[in-house]
Length: 170
Image (cartoon, rainbow, N blue to C red):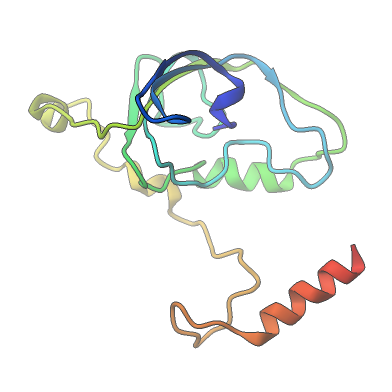
């Protein structure tokens, strides 16, 4: 989703400065990014806050299938999530030379610094989408800096050299 701070309509402050106990966010029809080579749908991310999202009507811009009006999703702290494979493919192939407006739906979100727990009913009800993670089937690794054979956590001097070249050219 877009950065929720620009769509927050209500905040409950916590005792810790800069940390909300809860934010209520609405994702209305909106102008999407207008720069060339931008990624307009929500990007892949993890959050420090727990997110509970719902769809009021229409479609959600990151998942046209499987996230229906009246449906909801929960991504607790540091749970990775983002657009489905088809949305990703459409987004990277889209013409970004002019603005576009998303008018296809209305979604809401509660974010909280607390961990949210599902009820037993929510975990066992027949409406639960048991194949949720399959929406990312078909995604491939698009990170060009990774070298085959490198072990997790290893650094590569060549990456630093590439970063210096990019900085020099910019």
